[in-house]
Length: 267
Image (cartoon, rainbow, N blue to C red):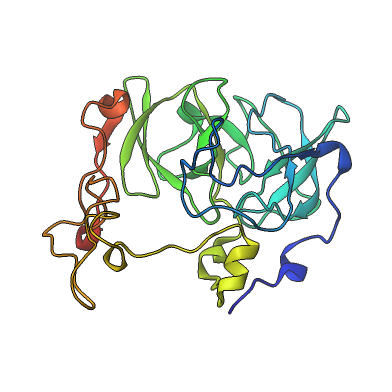
């Protein structure tokens, strides 16, 4: 079992009550009560931090007051005090410390934590919290330790290399934050025991090969068997894992992909 040295990484402050919300656990169920996402349920009670992904306070400098833990995400969050007196939670980039400042706008310096349009960001710069539509709020690259790279500008689009190695076109008026998401050591944490997974709300996962044929395409056989299929399938017979293409062939965003993600040995 491993853990993170939170006392060194966080400021030790309690979350701000006005920025907290109650969120009922859905346990992977939809509005009809049917399980739509398996292996979820239980876990410690959590309160939702109201993280600002809209970043609509333009040209108002903000100062970082705290660095805090967020139970709903792998990255850390920072409580920012804007010059007009407003306080908001934002996703904390790597190396951001209490007392640091950042600003959002079209003509701001290319500095870690600052946020500006992709058209103003030079090639080779690492970014996170990327918008897909102007004013739609950040949607991509928000997990701990992740970053994307601006590789080109062409025809009103910025070409971004995502953490998956996919290169994608995004309208260059969309905003992105400079830097990489903090808490990059999150991926090195090992839960170490089943109980710790249950604390996190993760229920057990049963292998398909351990099931009966009626329950899974990989099921059946006497004793311990292989899956008996050339290609792996999900419980519903769809291709999964092992470098197989699972993306919808006619997905609306296909036209924005310059280079598909690399999988397996190619990656």
